[in-house]
Image (cartoon, rainbow, N blue to C red; front, side):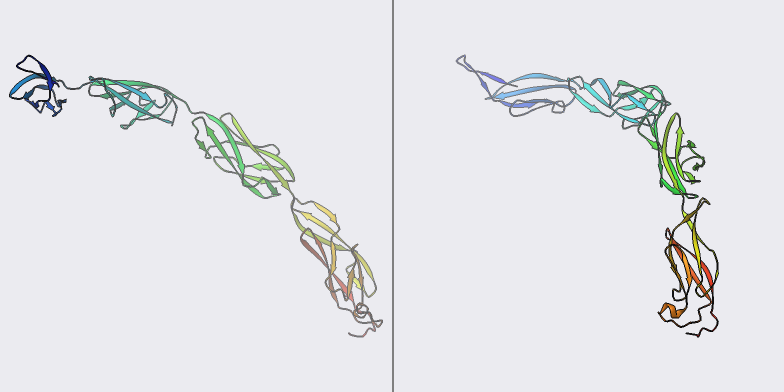
Length: 337
């Protein structure tokens, strides 16, 4: 507000009067003349200067909401995904503000909306999300799509097995909404069941190694497939030793041979590392030639010595040791050591 004083000589000047309001519940006025509307109604603003006063009427109207606009963080969702909706109110004085309206969905079987504005897609279809605030409404359309399987991967607890060992294989399904699951019931298959088989059911399955070789284990679910390669090897389970003769007299020889037995039941003739349990009564060469000797011969003496009755030959191969017993017949007339 401004005030202009008229003087007795006919001149005028802008002055700073004392300001007052007839109804401060409707409008207030500051000492500098700034009027602020408080509530709807009428008030008279008066300026008094050197005993003279003048006034002006002020009418204050209530600010009302004239419209509301609704926007969504995304309008396209897949089942299980969420979006956020917000509402902006426009007032009768031209200002705008973000408000918290009452939210509703036109089809809760397709999409629901919380009181805070979180939209959840439920199933494929379309729904309109509406916000209502002080008698005004605004809305936004939401389209929900069906979740589909976009891929499947298979992992194995180990990809290298020996025959009759087992491993666990797990499918991981990826959906179009970014979610994953390992609890699906995929269709399992092996590219070579003579090498490895796989069980069936939901979630993690068991692969069993059958024979040496490689097999691809595949899981198929809703048109998508994933696989893992399994390699099977045989394990050495025993070393079998045989001899041409198992009873020897002093000076006699025999030949020992070794056969490796594997976990798949196959046998293989091998050349192990040979050793004698008591080399002072029986020796063995790297080729497996066993010779019965006297203890005196072992120590470099030329006298006959009666040998020990029972002795063994060891064959070391692949981390295992096989053994055979050979009986030594003491010589007649030999003295006891």
